[in-house]
Length: 174
Image (tube, rainbow, N blue to C red; front, side, top):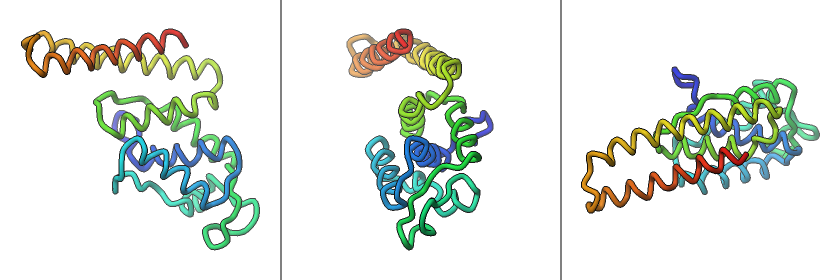
């Protein structure tokens, strides 16, 4: 984790793998494909987002094979109690709203697996998302105030602000 306890790229990928296994046991290859598919659709190919190997998650005791051993025999994998605890910790990590692809991925992963949290923690995560969006909106509104309205940047900032407003409205409806 970063100093502010937000997720680093490898932890975002770890969240994706643990979340997928929290839904249901998966074959080794199927899990690897599902994680790669989701991550790359949001961020594009990235060396920073290769993440931990599934073997490392096994060694750490976060996942375990139900049958077989691992990659060699495409074992069926499941989440351990320690893996479930790690998943909840990752889902509860604070957000950074700086517009990076990593932050976009973390928000998407949190929303994808939000239902795995207890109701009170789901509400807390949505409130944290709304707070982060509010801060981003204030930052962009400040820039907009010092930008000519008719400029391409002014028009772009209007689009960005409208998207943030729509996301804030969505958070309030949840």
